[in-house]
Length: 83
Image 1 (cartoon, rainbow, N blue to C red):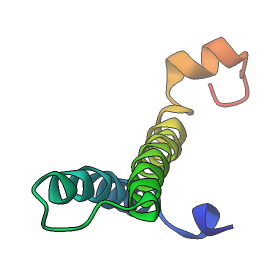
Image 2: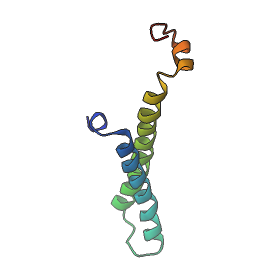
Image 3: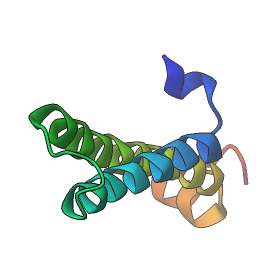
Image 4: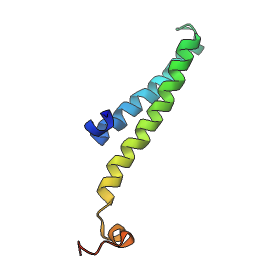
């Protein structure tokens, strides 16, 4: 899957770009620079939702991995092999 191949910061960046696209398209539709169609509205909504999901997944991958092996988390997990 693409999430396993990309680095967490790349996933977060893709999510940010999708959220910006999802916010920019309605602004362009409101200013009448782009015609408002059902397909464009669905694309805008989908880009926003997928962008937020990518951001959450990317941040979980980034910060979940780095904090997993800190001493306070090892104690909570009951891991005594790394002491």
